Length: 376
Ligand code: DAH
Image (cartoon, rainbow, N blue to C red; front, side, top):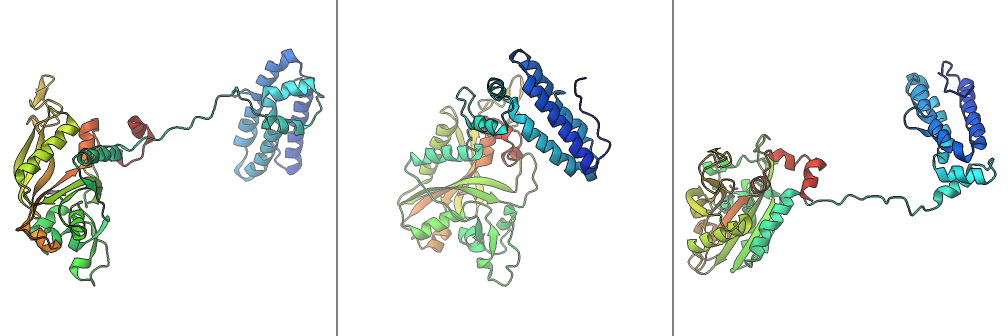
């Protein structure tokens, strides 16, 4: 009668030893008697993933073992596997057929180390640039080509850089628009030194002007934080790119020309821009910039219906900008009579959402490889 894997009923050490020894001796017997034309049957009987004896040992012995005996059963199952599994490799069996069959597992170890160059190689999946970083790099390179350099600043900022020096006076209602996350336990410090998570990349404007004199042309990409509950269009962490150009004789025309060029370079030459009056404490005048809808070509409707992306308006709002307020120059010791400049700030996540047709901002932050690898 051919050996079959028995059910275990007795979990004493002796009984387990006996069951394991029986199985191993059966294996040795079969293995040493196997002939070349029985090889396949032998391998199926022992190693078939479905119902091979090794699989059965796992199913019948290990999985069904009561909790308190799992460890002892597991130890025996591992021993069995270590002894039996080397023969799964047909070369090992062939070798044992050709050589003395009683050769011990010693020879299997040697064979195991031999390199089989016909085996498929190990595939190392290539990483992909994160869509936010990719978008940021593309946008930054548009400005690099215009002669801008890149500046960065800290994500944990002081009240001074995030607000005061950008012309948000203490208690000014403009601060309310920023949903700030404050660092706890700062009450004993003067307001200007208190720490917070920066709500925008605009503080890098101040840090840049503090360390260099005009002409200044910089873009400042980075992560920003606001106290927003996450949903499909909001995230407490998001990204911005700030821009700043200060020189003699910089006008609103330069601002318009620069942003119009940048939007065309990024979204395609048929995109139009329009500037809409707005308010930011650190720019005067200020504007919001809209681009003609890249989904419906600015028509407001497509596929016989309203365009959902621009809500049928034909325009999509993309960034804020303006001429640097003279008050801001006062904080960095630039002479506002001598210099003028413009600034702008755009949300990277929103641009990536538009560019890649993503319908939920949360996808950018969940680290799901199935989403991310599409950008490789
Ligand atoms: N910092 C602004 C925000 O986060 C965006 C912004 C608007 C930046 C106008 C600018 C600017 O540099 O000039 O809402």
